[in-house]
Image 1 (tube, rainbow, N blue to C red):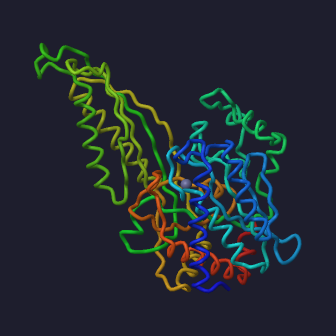
Image 2 (image 1 turned 120 degrees about the vertical axis):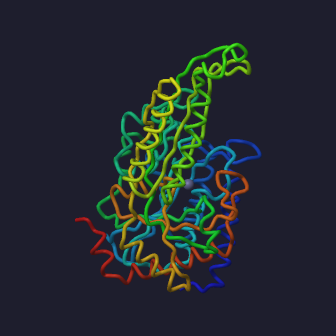
Image 3 (image 1 turned 90 degrees about the vertical axis):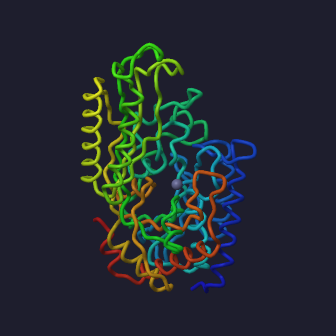
Length: 421
Ligand SMILES: [Zn+2]
């Protein structure tokens, strides 16, 4: 078993590797690495070297996911997947996604050739952010058998389809079903930076994700009357911007009245958009998230009623459409408890939390028990070059991961509970 001193050296290496991978980019001077780009190939090549040196057998599946299999002590044993995503947004930080893959590699290295009753498969997902094709989770969807015709036909800004991107990378479309999870998959584990300020505010290095939040996205259009700014008296106006503004303030107030609900109006566009014209149309978006499906849906209904009340009172009309309605995804209770136990063993009081952001674990959870461990995110900054992690937190993550692997290896419960057969 690795000592804490060892863990610090390994953690320093993890941080250095994340920074090195950030240099594999489509853009000079900043990090951008999208689905099956040339920089993704460089990234694969680099991680493959580390995986092979740690004793894993490396391959790239037909959806472009990098996979490194570290065999069990016995042939034909089941496997535990540990991973995250390797693609990034434009102008990205060095840790979102990548950290989870590099931590998984470091866990294999920390085993120092020791084999467990189950194999470990490190997975670096090809696509999670949805940057190139406007649809996220292309990589993890392949593992749960949802890389369908519709998704394969989607095109990027240059008219290249997902299908063509896969072929251009030298991968075989016919092999996509083979990327799917086998019956020998016990569970999926993901380390990820929190991408928020909660752990830092609590002074904790790590958090155990209990649920990935439900999410509702909508677009509302407030339709009033365009008119002259100088000649239309205030009481005879049907101003779409003012109606939207009244509603936006109500969104904030409503969110504050539900514990842990977060609501965001991230975009407002108005027409005709001139300084001397009363706006006839204001188009706004709403993003609502909560750990409970019912709370999320209840808040959405309440906000729609409020918008209807405002438009009626002001003599406007309302159009709306739902853009996304995603249910909350629970992490596996047994794995959550085991992760908490591992944290206690290394000297920390575990803290359960809700992930407000979607992650690959949410997709994998459709088919296998999944768990996530968050690492403190200094300043709560993510999706930005200033994104960072503390070496000591990465060391704690490695200690926790090793402890968890040892617990699962000695748990007869684990293989019994996890095998769906
Ligand atoms: Zn991520």
